[in-house]
Length: 468
Picture 1: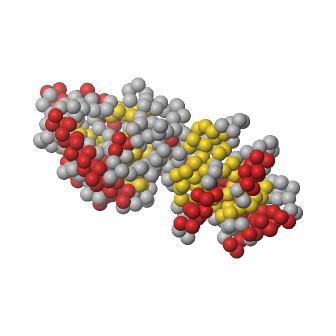
Picture 2 (picture 1 turned 90 degrees about the vertical axis):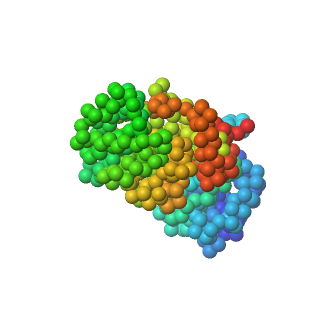
Picture 3 (picture 1 turned 120 degrees about the vertical axis):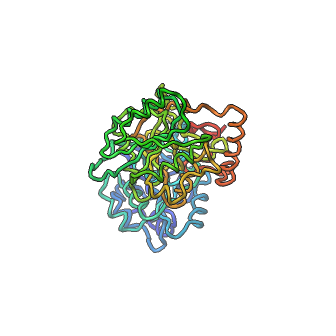
């Protein structure tokens, strides 16, 4: 046993556990980098420290040291130790994991592919381990011994500790890595038919029977045991539309008549009050349903204890993404994350393809428990008659502990704003400016950074690109 290392470990509040790979040609570079920074190092897998359990025996646990598992070949950025030490000093006593941003380095030591990470997102972590290899862990001897036999002990240890307390994110590039884990694209969720409650689908409409018919036919083809459909007609005067509404089966469809200027919030609020379903689905009439299991997939998530509004992956007719969650702060307002990315592209670390918590989702297709919707007062008819009402609703649900959720396994086509048009006339533009001002006043979207975005990512682009 190396006595110098042993003494150094005992005296150190921060211990680096270097995971020895079968081919560790970069090991010396890693060890030199760590020791230059004055860090105690244990080489797990070496003759001196064959297993993680052996490493646990060498650590003085009385000082509650922090552990840093990294792979051979990885190095720390200048200032990393100081940044972590400051974070440790300021961290709450229950904090068990502190993680930072990372990038990759090639064979010539050149950095590329930076990962500017979101704040803690437990659902995203289930599909993409963006912590292990770029974090500090406060574990005890028993924690290490429990995962020592696992080949992926570092990720197993991280996964165990994040269950105990919310990890702390340092928005700094502190790790240079040779490789990082890839996201795991999820299978469809398991669905128990007996657990599917009644759902009321609410479809506002005005004329445009071509869109409405496509939407309603898609609902009819949806594989779900108990659906009520409420169509809210906002002063349709097209004879073909009126004829279509009159011929719908009243056993499955109800039509409410809502007169006056278009107010998306008021229209949906009225229908939610009338709804019989345990859950409600706000659905634009310009949505085209392309898979029969979309609603089941969303309902499974909406029934979770800490989930509020659930949004789907919405596609333009050409197949590009129109909506994959909403991030506040984009354009000093809110934007659709990953807009124009194609579903089979990598995008930003495949985030568009992974279920995850998000700050908001669009009400073009939104599922939420009816009682939760009512508990926060529904959509704000006064401040947000047309725009941003979904963002405001999600923010209020978030405040109650019901986090917004993006479900990419529910895919639909959105013929965006075809039924109502865009706000290019002076009246519509003035109304939009008032709604934008209200959003900024209530939620400071002109100042804040979305916790699932990053200060180093552009506030202008919706595609998660690095700021220039």
